[in-house]
Amino acid sequence: MTRKKITIVGAGFVGSTAAHWIAAKGLADIILVDIDEGIAKGKALDLQQAMIMNNKDIKIIGTNSYEQTKGSDIVVVTAGIPRKPGMSRDELISINSKIVEDICNKLKEYCPDTILIIVTNPLDAMVYKVYKLMGLPKNKIVGMAGMLDSARFKHFICEATGNSPKEVDAMVLGTHNNSMVPLASKATINQVPLKQVLNKEKITGIIEKTKNGGAEIVKLLGKGSAYYTPGLGIMEMVEAILKDQKKLLPCTAYCEGEYGAKDIFIGVPVILGKSGVEEIVEMVLEEQQQMNESIKHIKKLIDSL
Image (tube, rainbow, N blue to C red; front, side, top):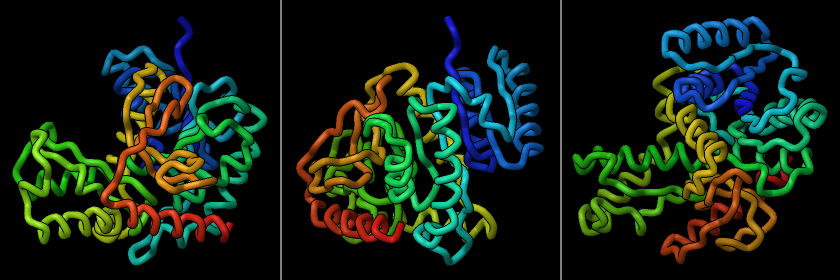
């Protein structure tokens, strides 16, 4: 069988870490594209040699040309300027919008029918822009944000309770900024509702920590933002699609009335399989008002594109 092919646009920390996770699992051949050809080629060569040590028979190529991306099963877009300490993700919209537009113009030539996973911030607006530029069906464009925010939510729950991540089930929906919606009402520990384990004050504290989790890392790093967790989130989405796992994951998807959202991309629970977003799973939420605020924020952000 012909091996699957993944293109990752952006060989920075997030893109190269995603490539690392994908390669380590042997999921597909990888094309690592970056405007800086030396960075792309150098990281690809290092990763290729690591996979020799890891006994993974996959091919990894670094390039600044989109020609080699032709026929990619999935394209992951991580390229863009990361935020600096004190910045919000929304402040990146002007410069990253131009970067994303240039990428889409090139992908339309070589990968007109691929599945796209968007990671560039501000995520919700960038996914919408890609959707409008590429002209692909809604199921073929999805954003990686809920995976990251949900991991942070679970981390802070584990930190507060001492439980193993295997025992915690928690999810974050909504926009990828401070209007995100950690679903405290749905979170469980060993199937016991979180609100029966922790008091309201502690849960509120966990929610605030989750919302500020990215900013905390940006501040600590001083330059750049998180990459290990986003990289792993990308890999899980890629695996769900390539292996047709029909996996329930929190992703940024196009809504047509689900959760009160219409004609926008927002974080919702989706079934991810070989066709991309195969279904949006609707639940009744105690946090619907917070979802409504997320929707308003995204619409305002889209209007500024």
